[in-house]
Image 1 (cartoon, rainbow over the protein chains, first blue to last red):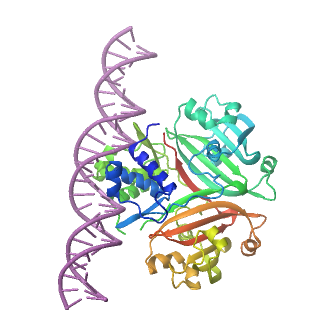
Image 2 (image 1 turned 180 degrees about the horizontal axis):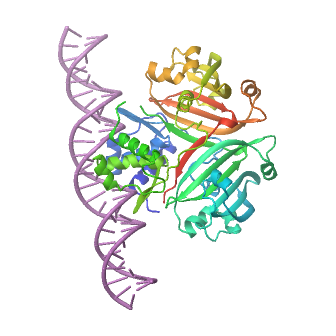
Image 3 (image 1 turned 30 degrees about the vertical axis):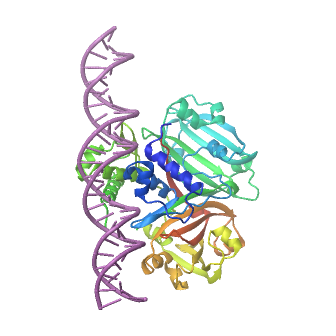
Length: 240
Length: 240
DNA sequence: CAGGATAACTTGTATAGACAAGAACAGGAG
DNA sequence: CTCCTGTTCTTGTCTATACAAGTTATCCTG
């Protein structure tokens, strides 16, 4: 993976902040100093800084020096954010992950599901239901609808492994944008069947629509999360 | 509010997309054409485009033309995202909003709450509890802790109106970064007392820490949302 | 010592130019 | 017709430079 200049700088600074080289509340070196260190233009450096600001690592304001506001994250790091796959999250936290396919069928999009999913009515789709286990506990019920024409040759075996691996590496499709929505819903009988809900009668539902590089929506996903292991983090900035 | 060049271009293009001037799935004008239209440099234009990409309005890729993927939003627009206040959301959707202060005390941060909230132990704080009503229905239980030294002179009356108005306009403090976390929690007796939970036994909890322009955390907020009226939207991008 | 103008920083915005990498298109060879 | 190969267009990255706007420090004056 060929790193761009600004991305390399971003990662380096990010790592140094995480390692405590620039402590929280301390003042960051000025842009002038940093361009000397990295031997780059100010624009390139600022691009790296902009990403650090966006991710909540540093804070800036006209005239004032840049200040470090990073805080070394949280208790359980199992969270979604970005289009990170279940496997990636599990691997990052060194958890034992397992995926079980409980349904794999082909069907057509009817009017009702079209309205809910954003997929064109009449389209041929794969309908995949999977349960995600972490350390042996059933945590997530994933419902995926894939446009058949975009993801040809999908099988139950691939679904048990990693569909995104297949899409990106085998089919060479680059996934670009994903629009997601988070809500809290009543647990259905179907949820209860597959997740150990305990005395919770709700779950966190993340529904998402994913578009390929041609701007075509080729997927609708609904991830139904056990409340105890769901966490979503976000950094927002308000300027002026 | 003095608009910058790139922000003006961003808003103009955003509006044109929302108004259907550039339909979904259509190809956007090339950067070369747009720089002619807006009579600006490519860098400035690209800054506007970057924001449109980030917000999920358009999609780009090296070599290919930019494509419009905007979709005219969703059913109930009551959602959080950005640091938009309750009042702002209500006003945007023309809802009748009301805020009732159910607790307004001053206290000190003890060790336990310090760990939970990120505020320094021993700090003097205002402890404010409020219930948010929309169209007469109790939807949100807001628990705010404000650092007294940063928000002096806060009163119950101000809390009933808008604390952020007071902070930004009266105190002239510019709020910069807010780090939030979304989880689903069991409803407590306190929740049940103030929100009409129906047969839900959970609620969506958004806890946030807000930092002022000096990098000092001056607030901890916990918004406990009735599940039925909670919705969070997000656009994520995966490159390469 | 206090107060205020001034200078020396800082970050924010904008321009013009260059090259690279990928995609689309044309035209020619088979 | 198909396949290959350049050419051209598009977006992605990077540089160098200029000015604006806000903050901080300095120094001069009363």
